[in-house]
Length: 145
Image (cartoon, rainbow, N blue to C red):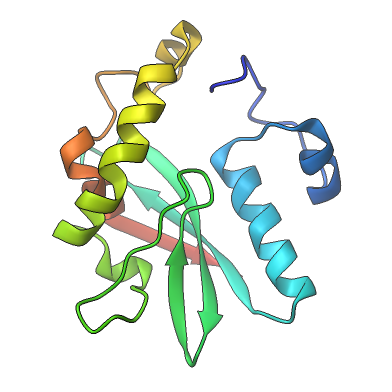
């Protein structure tokens, strides 16, 4: 959304996505899972849907230290639990720590969105999660290996 119109259905390989220098959240997530696999770290895509059922986002879980850990490569976000361990995606929805982690990245993103973003259902201004409530993006989850 930031570098200009990028077709959501490019059908690129992970290498082509990196070479293109731009990518949707699902493409960025695929690249992170592929890079983790090269390092021997299991990963899976995490499909998130906001409580309004209009806004979606793709993130990643990596299997680290005996458990799944949530990472958002698009917004460079991870969330720590109170015990200091990394949170799983299922622990994100309604989590104040997640709201705090997403506050600044969402504010930066919304400030830089180009006008064409309004054409995309789910990420136009009326559908986006509020800057102070980014965790609500994770109300509904789906995973794939």
